[in-house]
Length: 83
Image 1 (tube, rainbow, N blue to C red):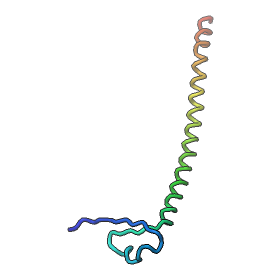
Image 2 (cartoon, helix red, strand yellow; image 1 turned 45 degrees about the vertical axis):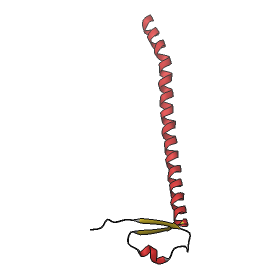
Image 3 (cartoon, rainbow, N blue to C red; image 1 turned 180 degrees about the vertical axis):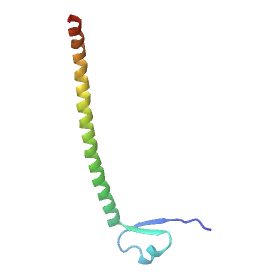
């Protein structure tokens, strides 16, 4: 039994005969196909970047709240000493 080999061919429109796409293991893509893939990937990355920005914003707020709490701990300790 032979090993299945997949071949990818990227070409400008009209540079490849249509029969090439019919060959077993051959996949033919043109430049427009790749442009669509690039556009979809860019959109996906932009969405994920916005999601990441939301996470960063929330984590920054929590970190700042924690930092603020560190400043109040000595005050609380001193007030307990005077009680």
